[in-house]
Length: 363
Image: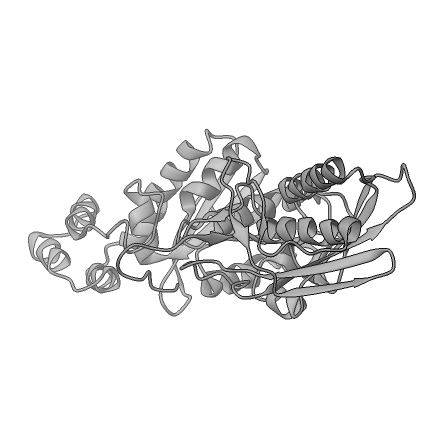
């Protein structure tokens, strides 16, 4: 995970906000012959940012504008990508239509906010673009009947660094955003991807999902169950976001898989497993080991351990099943957070991807 910079962080703009600004500039040029630069838009919460144009082109019946996305201090894969909008006039009464240009994906699986076969342009950006088309049409006495083609040079390569391939979005990135603003290190994009992954699993009718903290545990679960790729949720540190969404959008069975250190924190009730927001409590691990028969010396050595894995090894030397205790307690926390609506198993792995604890196992 990218390290958060020191000091105040600069916010940025979503792909949806950039696409909206580019669309407004292009349609204005189409009906007036002039590109506004900078171009102003109003975001859903009332903010009114201005965007400088990086590209402007026009031909008979069409105009195109491009804006370089500034994600602020957020480690966003689309930072500095050029979001382009080509607006083409359609016959009167046609309405507004969206098209995926090069670098923008197309939805191929159900469960996402837009239908299969549609450009991967989410509902809020669609609404924002439709609103600026209506605004410009009213201001200049034009008809709001257009095709809006959004493209992102290099977007197909950028998409490989996102969840899009797993979600069934092919050919490029998605045009996203609910507020138009990127808040640095808010992790909202990751959490939204978790939610969309669950939606796709449910829409595909799968009865078994696997939420893993990283690629090592995902590979281990794949070897264990041979699930289809779309059954996997890249949970990372966001156990709470995963479990709370499943509470209201349940699947029949959930495999929750992670490393010993992260699941020590889940077992204590922490739902954000990031090292900066929760820590392994060695005193708690020593107490749990004591409940399973660890003597005073072993408990003291666990309290003085350098890491959670060190504590696990100390317990194992004395035959104390500490990872099993962690698995059992983590499962209790998970079941509590899904309100018992999902059958949950918890698999705990060490650094070598060896299964060291399992609770509620399906196999």
